[in-house]
Length: 482
Image 1 (cartoon, rainbow, N blue to C red):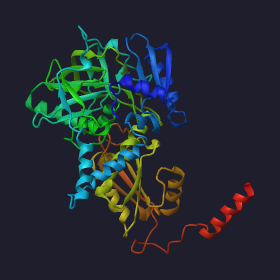
Image 2: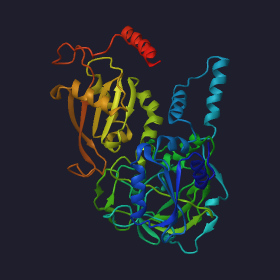
Image 3: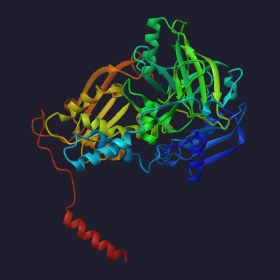
């Protein structure tokens, strides 16, 4: 399902009983965060919040729009996020047809892909209003936490292009406001946007950048998805919404932005300009990211829809809204992992692990030390390289049940035999690493041990009741209940 605008999504949330409207004036400096944080900590993530009157700004602010499993599914236009995973899994397993019946089935798959490629258009509602003088103060940009260095744009679609290949990248990088037409661009060391910037610096060329805000909620999800470098996020967005994303060219550079988004910030980064200290910022780790040098984004033009809604989020001590976005990514891309590791049954990133800190994966164990093979393989896959702790359990474990995982973790490991340490790239936001961007990792094999694994005594069976007795007692209890 495709949404025509963020306003359209707001109406959908309201109709589904997933929206609270805040009609009183609230200050984007700290006050919106306090209300939103309380809501995000409620069971199942509370409701989405629409702040209709933001102090000092001209536009309403939407937050926590992705902050539950239900709202995440609504944003992606499905009943359940797992529906997308099953569809993607089917595509990955598609084979050349060997019969007419298979050809018809494959044609149906092709129809699902026909909307993936973005389409250029000459005009868009995102350019309905052009600010005569760019001024970020008209937007309800939040200062999220008390020690933040200032206001931060937290849900931007930062659009850049590889100067060599022309490939587009859409990333979600926080942007600290410096003045009415300048921000920092916090693209981290390992991000594609940072790679583009380094290449422009080698070429000694000014780097065009466009920042889109709002539009179909699938855009922000696509910008945060763990896609390989070179894969266009707008192609994923088109696939998910079953409708090509219409892209319109900016007025001050050749980059294209979604024609239906709410705001567009057009500008550039000068790779030869001296870096300056960005931060602190209250981050998804639950701690403040300390100041680090980053480049500046200079805004040449701001455009927006007449009915624009400003999208925002906050991060901090979990659980927060971003947990549900991350969980959706894991569910959708699980078939990709399973294509590379057919032994993987399921995977979970608990909220307490704030994405990269902890991954729990269940496998169908087939040979000695199989868990070790999976750990090393996962650390070599894209953003999984940042994972600090990987716990591997057996296929019968529900990886989403923390209590069950902890039981197996405590019961099934001998630390000397089942724990491995290694080193590799780390999230630059991880304050616990000895140096920025590099640290140690731990892998824990919490599976049942089998013959061939060293120092292993005969493994006892898990306590389970006899199935015949269970069925007999089910019947007895039904009679008692009557």
